[in-house]
Length: 118
Image 1: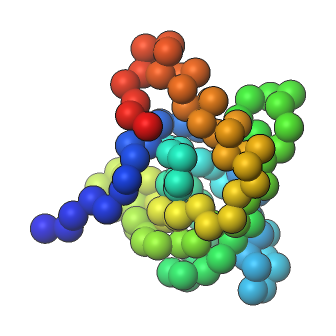
Image 2 (image 1 turned 45 degrees about the horizontal axis):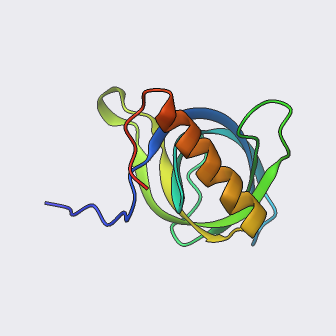
């Protein structure tokens, strides 16, 4: 049985994200399916190799400044039994401003009826 190693819960979201592989500079459009202060699940047609370092560029809300951070791919999900095809990643390099924006977004969602623990 696998043990969940996350320090924080994740918030279900549907956010467009542009991904750039830092090794190959390959880019891909995808969606963040859940978001936490230290990581996310990315729904993607492309499964970047485990341990890949990626730039994730996304907006928490339309009209808001773009968030750009570096994340590392930790695991894959291959879309069996109707689940989404994608990968889990951990944020490695996030500016203080972007980190604060993510925290504010999550807290804002919590005050609108979502249960979320920071």
